Image 1 (cartoon, one colour):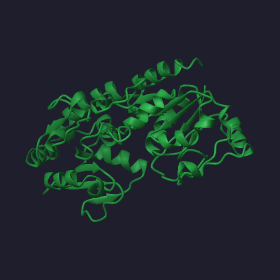
Image 2: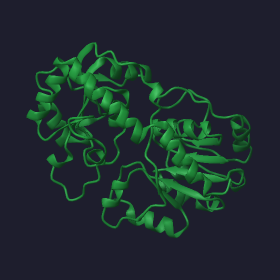
Image 3: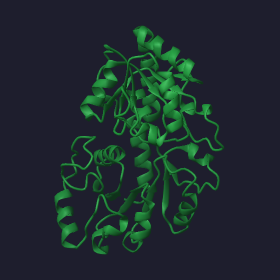
Image 4: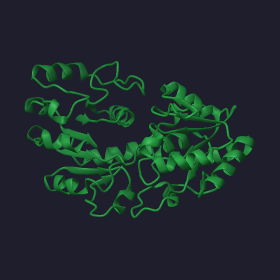
Length: 341
């Protein structure tokens, strides 16, 4: 199957284009992996873009199509004859792209892929798109907790390939967290994080945290894998209301023991986090209810490598069951079979 894939999220794009290609499909990306590189973000390595990519890129140009990565959907153009080369279009999160380019896109099936963000803001838009024939592929079942939920045609979580991660060493007695623009995006949760890690050796990865003494800034993919292998504990305390849990998934499947702040700590009318649905507290992760509990749990993990190994190994086993590549690949194969190719 030829798949046109539209995305603004580099890491999810890397994972899904990679998986769909491994499943035997030819994917042409309008996103970070539109060309052979270098990439706008650089958070993930180069991808094998498939045997037909060079020819599709030539046809893209010949038909007068163009793509503006940093621009609005209106700044790109998709010639109908180019879109006709594909069997299916998948749009990651960027629903305005569908509205702007619907005349070209609607000649083939269109799938809108949610990513666990923008909750309760666009369900009305999703409802209209479904009425127009767009298939809605959800990231998490907990998205159904939103008011005016527009439904789903399927639910497929994001995934990770277990073999991508390095063997655990635990040689660095530090607490690791990743959250870009932490205070700007999640001010309440940043305050909780600060209280929770007080007095502990800490590394905070991600852009936009330069004011934080423990910040290590953006890291390469190789550096991230090394940190997940070496640090003694991982603390998840950002985006607690969302089913979007990218850095939790990566930490959990890497085998680093994870401490996660309960999403119940911040009062809110809508709860869509799925972490409570997948972890067994005290067995494959430690769930804490306040900064004092978090500080105690993190201190114990930093001080007791054997405890960390036990929880980390159990977490990795459970993460593979929920987010592992093989189970998600089977779900994608079933979903794509509905389109008759």
